[in-house]
Length: 610
Image (tube, rainbow, N blue to C red; front, side, top):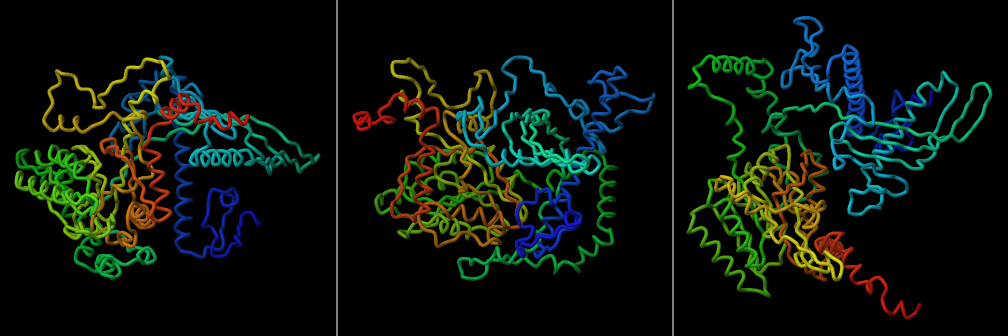
């Protein structure tokens, strides 16, 4: 009874940690839940477990169907069109139609490690070996610690395996407990799922009949099969529920609480005419009537919903903090000129300019360059002069945001970034007002001296020929538009030898001003390099907004040397040193350099001592 009526004695911390536990899965009641937010969390978790169970049942049915039609002599590529009787199809709904059940050829594949048959050796997917560390042939670091996501996945697999094993324990009078994972193998088949082999050390206890306890060792051959892809379309432009007040404790620039004015919109609109129409289904009937009317019109008079949300024409406001670095700003403006000024892209640029006391001429040169481009193209380029104030990236971006309206899209950018038309499209479609912000993971270049240096790419005395063109290859006979040529000009070859994706960089952001103000904005007490973007990222994670984060190969951070100011706060200084080390070169480059300079591994003083 104690196991199914689960009582957690942790007080206010009850059920705030990991929910993936055997005790929680076995219980039929959980008590006490002190925080209503944890109740929603528990509800969502058990709903997800139910969805997972339904997906497993769906896969089992697909496998049964595939096995049955195989017995009937039906080829796999004919299953989707197979008819049980004339006019009675096995799968009535086809791809793209409502009620489509998925591709049986993939979902109905048998539980077998040879579901994917490679045509050549290069297509074979190798296993990674797991013990205390993970060993793989496809990684630049062949032996490394087990990453947190993989460790959590293995824990989930072991928990589910033990639940399956102990399912009939009451009938059989025995219990088997997990003791230790001795070793295992894991690989990802992109088409079908994850294959896992685990060598488990278990503890066998029999409590009925002749009681005994023994240590047993078993191999588990497991597969996590990918289910069908499902898409859910959500309406855009609807304000979300109000934020938790604790997320909004910080103050804005004027010292007022930074909650947005639409925070209580849900309550005020409850009895509004539009809400009343929705409840009476008048709006739905009216829209259906319009749809029927549109379908009855001649083709030339029909209107479409293509421009209901004109995403690709939505204006982006680039906000660029800048101090000194006039030459780099020239390079950025050439990029901006080719992609924006010479095209019909609806993009504005706001430059927030600080004066560098070490290079005062850079301030004047940057001002003159902005004036030149404004006079030449007559497009929206604005300058916010911060003078000789102490540089603060958060303050600079906040000052730039003051020039735009609440419902406009802002993109926080750095002067070292390179972008193209594809970048602009992704910013527009991945940033959704009231719902989602876009944190792209940008590609950061390594030091060119390391990328092309002999010491970092070959052994001493070895001859090596390297290509110096990092741009993408284009056949000469390809007919490309001006926009496509510009995209190629500002594209880079994305490989591990030339750079890496900045997984822990949060400075580049697409967000609507109203959403930015709603979560309180930047911490303006942070001065100098870094940290303000990390704190904003953490605040957005805790908010009702979805943080969309993905690698974007069109956003490239051009390499520049990093000088870390020793006067920075300790956390900022350590972060700066970490960035400096990360951008130096790849693991391969470091291997070559260390092997070419063994004195770094075995200094002369140590040799003499030995």
